[in-house]
Every structure is written in structure tokens, then in C-alpha cells.
Length: 241
Ligand code: ADE
Image (cartoon, rainbow, N blue to C red; front, side, top):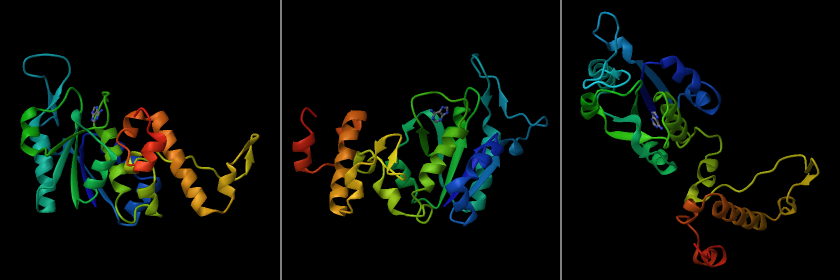
């Protein structure tokens, strides 16, 4: 899977993605993250990439030409037009479902905006998807782009050591993950739930399933309504759903 990130702050993205699991996957050649510095494509002799908004108002707007040419350079290199995602609070809210779906792409272009925004005309020309990471406003698209790269990458086969953990954890079937415990057996006067020490795998699985359901119901009632439960489970846990 190859990501091409169009940004004015390539170092920020590079540094953010070179550690831990994503860094390891890049080293292994499972992922390829290329940053493209939009400023390298400006035709302005002072390397300017933004200007005042027509109609007035606060802040600056990123101009169309450098973004268009940076995008064109990626398209020419790749040989076709990959999906191009513009990170913006005006987009569809990113979810685990979208992360999984996007992990099937060979190439993805992520466009990071800055300042008050980007000239609408270049967005109309190049953007295929508008994505938000939540209902709050950040100073730029770099953090959201990193969020997408992380969430999408871990759905790419081989990136996680134990592929299973990509499937069984939080949000599969709209359920939160069950609580986890590790050694020691007693810490700070608190015991590990005894069922986890029983060695009875079926009982452990049942307990975990129940914990997932109860936790989702309590902490994320919005998700719980959409959870994938059996009829028997809805009867048991779902009153006043
Ligand atoms: N750019 C600024 N805020 C954003 C957000 N919440 N999601 C995606 N891109 C953004």
C-alpha cells in the first residue's frame, strides 16, 4: 500500500509515522509513505503558496496551482489517478469501516490543507473524498492524515504481527473491546478476574463477549444500538434499547 501525502509540512508527517508499528511496516516494505512538499511545486518566485481570500475575511487561502501540480506529479509517477482524500472538518467522519475499505487501495493521495482553507477550484479538480476525523477544528490536515495512515495501515495484511488483533478488537460488530489484564495476578490489592485464570477457553470467551456488550452499552450507547448481537443477546442485554 502506498500513501502520497501532499503537505506544506513534510517533516511533521515523516516524523510522526516513522516509529512503532507503522515505522516497522515501512521498513519491511509493506507500506510506502511518500510526502510531497507542495511548496516545491509553486511557480511563484518567492515560493509563495497562499494568498488573501477574494471577498475578504481572516487568514490566507492555499492557492490552486502548487497543489494541482504536486498532485499531477504523483499521478504521473503512479500512472493513473488514485483516490485523493482531502482532510477537512467538512468531510464524512472517518470510521473503522472506511479504514478497512481504504486498505484495499493500492495507492492513496492525502491532501493536507492549512490556514483558512484551499482554493475551491483545485479541490473540484482533484479530490475524490472529503474526510473529517471528528467535529472539531485543527490547524491543518497533517494530524488527520496521520490518523488515516495509521488506521488504514493496520488493516493491511502483515502490518500487525497477529492479524487476528485487527479483527477481534474494538469496534468489530460495533462492540468495544473487553478489558485486558497482564501480570502480576494481584496488583495494588486488585485481582485479575478469576475466570481468566481458569484455563477454560469457552468460559473466557463468553466472559469477554459479555464484557464487550456491557461496556458498549454503558460507554457508547450510540454504538450499542447498531451492535451485532444475536437475538438471545438482545433479549438478555437489550432492554430499553
Ligand atoms: N482539518 C482541520 N480540522 C480537521 C478535522 N477535524 N478533520 C480533518 N481535517 C481537518
